[in-house]
Image 1 (cartoon, rainbow, N blue to C red):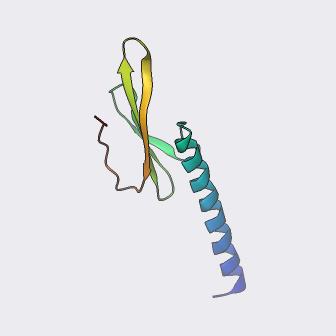
Image 2 (image 1 turned 60 degrees about the horizontal axis):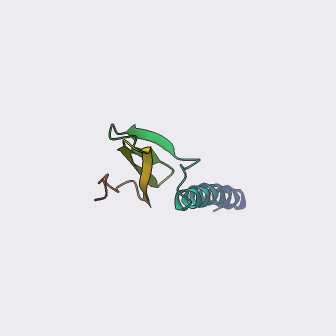
Length: 87
């Protein structure tokens, strides 16, 4: 492997890691991810599936009469994670 190719792969990995850590930190703070794209929006109050580069964020939203839409839970995992509303 050439030195230039190693440099490019290292740079791509660092950028991916920055995206991953930023979105993970935002999800832990109960906010929407910055670098993941909303793909599926459910009609249950606004639950959303976001897809990032190798990861997936699911934001579960419950619609209540008193408070309106409120985030119940946010999950962070792989693309294979399934949507299942928390009980």
